[in-house]
Image 1 (spheres, each protein chain N blue to C red):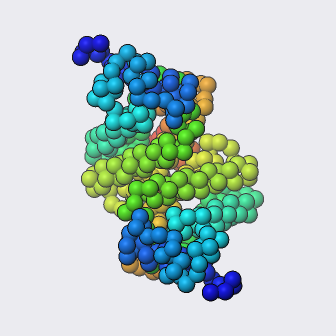
Image 2: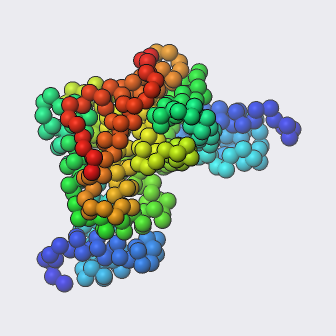
Image 3: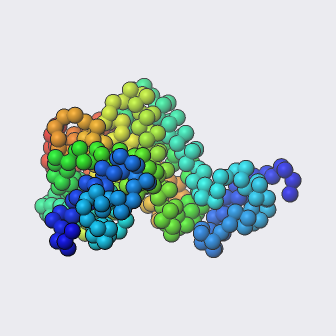
Length: 195
Length: 195
């Protein structure tokens, strides 16, 4: 194997998902992943810090997309509009990726350490989104509330997309969840006071 | 020390918080906590599985309160009304507990393992609330979305309460966050379609 490996990263990710599915995450070694992908262990470690990181390497991209979309939302956009734009941007990444996402989720759901890692990553996405909203001039608690609510919408939409059988994209599920959010906060019968 | 220790549990919790604050969570041992509380290690282990559990023992109570309040909300209550009742019930637990909650949060924020544990507990509260809503006949995705959004409201309110200097109760902060949630979902300028 030469030093130039076209899409070694993609092949490593594919090999890891296969092996985690076949043998379980705990029992799979980096050496096995590298072998399945046809690269050296050294190549593995050029791309990923460890075998867990293969499953979470995408979260940096998601964070960058969220932050960029919030920063670039039109000047007069409301906080929720900016968050909606961010969720749309994230939704686009997952087009045609449902089978991949589903396999990844099965592996994560089977392992408490990976589930914790997933929650941490989601919490850090919420923090990054709240920070991006504050940089647009959105005050607290609205910035954090919008960011946390946006992540709630994303979690619910993602779970339904993974379980779903309809169209392949995540975006319609995000739009559905946003619509449900508006409906559920709009139809409540009791007014709520401020402190 | 006899076998009958009045409020040994409360004293153990108090001693643990003091020691975690003074020496750090990692460096504190169960033996030290028991000694500070004036009980035996055996008594410690009758109340808590390990030193981490001292910080999270309240989450079972919170889950029970959430589930009960959702189950007992009036028949015609909307999902968000049921969730609001649940958050009000939880808010009541924290009356006069801000100093305690603040000290606990400083310890948790300083330790990645404890932060992960906190996120897991919050995620399991959301799952329990969603299940309680489904038992009221609330369909998905509304049940999960309401539950996740309710936890988002709780997180934001809790963080502001901890940082705050105003009244001592959590409830006004929960009402503030719920009001902000309604405002932010109501004032967005673009309609969102359903898939």
